[in-house]
Image (cartoon, rainbow, N blue to C red):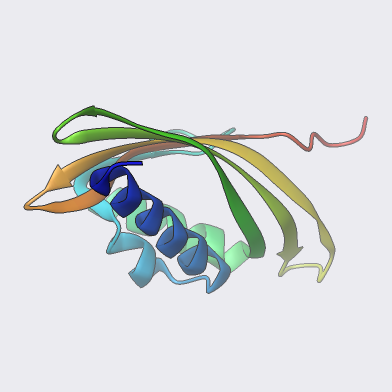
Length: 132
């Protein structure tokens, strides 16, 4: 990995820690101001205010305990990097106290903003579908 790809890997580690801490504040430090959060089964949240609101809703509803495994990080240009990850762990639903397995695949697009790598776009989908 080159230096930019290593810096993006560090941002992914920070994002994992922010999720596990249920910290909207820490998540927001990692997003570009015009970022887009695209969770499965929900409309995209575009821009800082919408992203902040979405994470507040998520963290009010659940507690994540997840670990990211980086599958690839590729620099596309001096200011753009794409990363593909898988995550696994558990999710605790605050309303019921129930805990269950959590597993996703994720795609991140990072943009260098004022010399710092930020999440520009983030989408994920489950790899642990609900039982039918």
